[in-house]
Length: 228
Image (tube, one colour):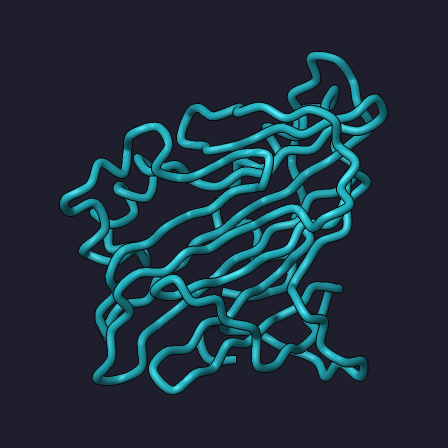
């Protein structure tokens, strides 16, 4: 691995066409596009606690996607069945830059949720999906929190937020299709990091456990696999 630090293991089976997480409501796929062109992983490896590392190594840039099970800490009366996080890191190679890119978590055809709705607030861009038996949230950091990270030099490009209101509602696209996080120009000395978290449980009316579970920082997603 080039952009994360930790241990990986050799995987014997063929690499899946798309990185994904299977949930009771369907399969969520993770994808990367640069300048409106989609790219597939070039290799992948296992991680020590059951996660995966997908590698996108191209001539002008490198990207890695770590998919990790998240150990969620909630109040004693709250719980989720499972929680997974996907952390993208991308960096232009020397002498190159990335004009724009998009990080997406989207539903594969055949999902079985029957309703969805925005559930955004407190630094979290989230959307809830449910049917009569299960509920699920997808969440990521909102534009305001990404701006704070940019100002702190925390793996967000310096160009982020210039000429566009990234804190406006709708900058990060969340819908029935999933969540899409667009990112601005990156120079060769910059690394960008974006994460998406998914949590689900059996449906309980007015239960906010899955919403709370997807409100995570990248370091808390990665620590279960010993990555940094």
